Length: 293
Image (cartoon, rainbow, N blue to C red; front, side, top):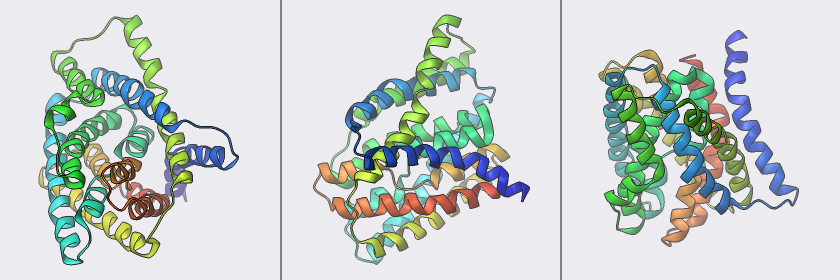
């Protein structure tokens, strides 16, 4: 019972904030997703990432090991899901990227923070950055046939990660008034992302629910297996391993739907994956956490 209560204390705030966004839209109130997303991804999230890395007590060597583990885990997920999509004759531009990349920002960062504190957040932002670089290059190539490493590096959240890693490595600190300002801005990120997730889910028109259900279940199994395998092979510390599994196993991100719509893939099918995998995560994420908390 104590374990259940502990897991609920971690996961309940995440899903309740998403529920706030869902109810807000269903009640007919205005919510400008494009503006809020831009505010979060270009300002709030970069500030959160930079300050989390600058202030983390995690050794740079451990963060480097987590980076390698994240690359290996996503590489393994890519190979397995590519075989899955090819084996079942699924449309690659529609299904492959959503099955590889999860919602490491909206869900992964707050879950890592609530479950494992600042140490967990430090690991989570590194994994988030690895995913972001891959998603803005390889992921876009899968959906559209083109991608740019330069574009990925220019993303504010990736730049903030690199800058934060430099400050961590050198032991530098910004002046207190600058740090306090950046932290205040960064504190907007998590509630904004979670509420926006609920808003986005409420507005989606899902399609192919049956297929979305079994693909979502398979995605969880593949992602947990690959992340666990990579982490154990590299002998990651307990918290780092837990955060890696948690991040890689997050549900399909809303950005996958936006990319599918932009590049004329089957957006309704991707919307189904987003909705079903997010609902499934209400069960799968607490189960994953129960093994590590």
